[in-house]
Length: 355
Image (tube, rainbow, N blue to C red; front, side, top):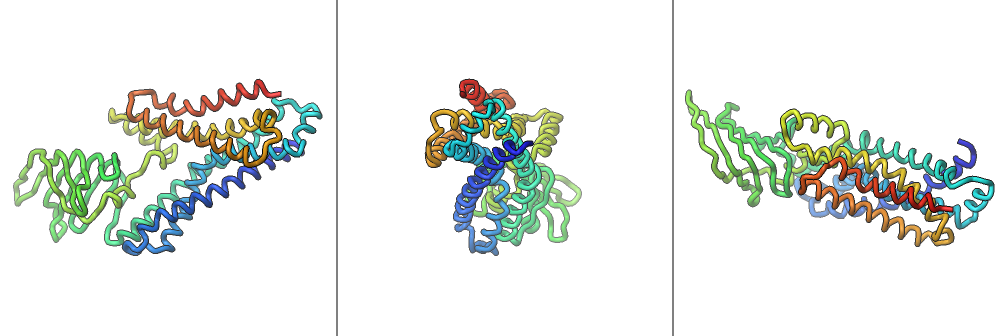
């Protein structure tokens, strides 16, 4: 990179980091406020809530970086346009394509930061935050990792599948132990729903109970199961596909395919992570046609508002597409790339018209 390249890149990255810092402060404040209802439960204190908030900052940065890149690039290049620096740069013979190349360097650096956050920093720190909160609030219980979530409540061991609702899980296995740790019964429910405090409704619950040298099998039925473990605590141990790394998602996709299971949710999450990361480069490039056109002399407030509207529009479109993927039998890969493809088409069309 020459001096001009470094100057453009530094202007964009400085503005993006400033916008990201502001968004992170606001996001951290909302997370900390959201933890107030849990403070005082078990050993969960205000200090624990603050630590939980700090550990979630990398995940928030990962989610907010595309919007910050859009707003920050508008502000960075906009400040150069208002100071007539872009006019001088264009007067020296720098074309729009060359200017886009300079801007793309900043975009690729931000893509690298997004990959570092999403694949290395955010997942383990967010998991640590969830575990810290779980052990602070429910210090009498423990949970392990593996297939679903393994929980122990006294002489009962539970294994739950994926969480399909705030109080509903895709399946539950119940292992009942005696006082001397002998297995007394094994049961499996197709669906587990928290009915009330300390009560679970197990649907299609089939049980095998060991009585001496015999096994008594009970046909599928509904069962009301008493447990001190709540749906909120179980939810802490069940991973959300959006919070998994690309490598973990790909392993799950291979496992689901090998067992002839529905992979749409995980396929969408996998391709969505890649698509939204690639969208950062196009979000940065989108600033060029704006600062060379109608927003050349606009103030920072106008650019921020437009960037925020575009970012929120992209975010809402992605959430709408995500809902459609889970409800309708549509191709998850194509839908995951749809918002990024629309953004790329808009950027290329505006750059072709830029002068």
